[in-house]
Length: 255
Image 1 (spheres, rainbow, N blue to C red):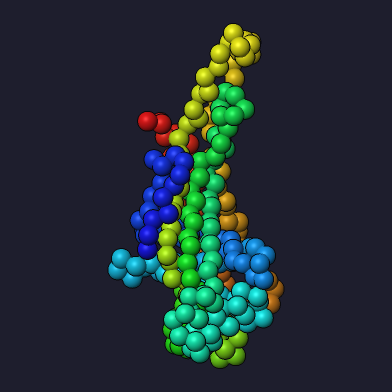
Image 2 (cartoon, rainbow, N blue to C red):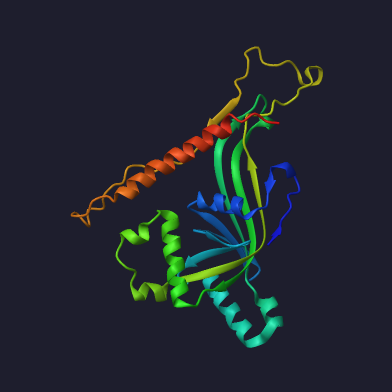
């Protein structure tokens, strides 16, 4: 995996696997871009990042009728039939992005406004996971990515669903992570050219931003079931963790 070196604000860049995983772990939805028939496409999908030693792999899942799944399936068939040259020509390449906004950064002038955020970009090559046991294992990890231990709290997956769901393995070729935290930068002004400052002082600062999981609401379809204690614990712990991260980022003093 090669770093995709940032061209701007290079001091905000990271390229290690753990930083990559942390952004995707905190994001329920990522965006997956690819090209089909010469046209760019972009889909919201759940992305799982798995680390094996010094190598990271991304995993996606979807219905076999989706265009991305169809393209990857055809690509895999071409690899089997045409060797290395066909492999390189037909390989489905994707760009996967994920972003967590941690705060609204309000400066003293319009062009100083920005966000505290964590973002990650992956470029990679797709193939289908065909081994049934491996696909089942990855389906469990994708489920637990949404709610930890949810796979253990539900009925076993049906064999039909295992056959229906397709899992895509994305070999990560390059990645970059870009983050911003801290208080605003105060934009310099030339009073002679730009005019005087406002008479009233301008408030500057950060509005912390984080998503909050609400109290679970029963479906009414399983009346005898109770809310799993670890689900309630997860909701509480995730809310607190995201709040603390956003508030800590808001108060960071810039170098």
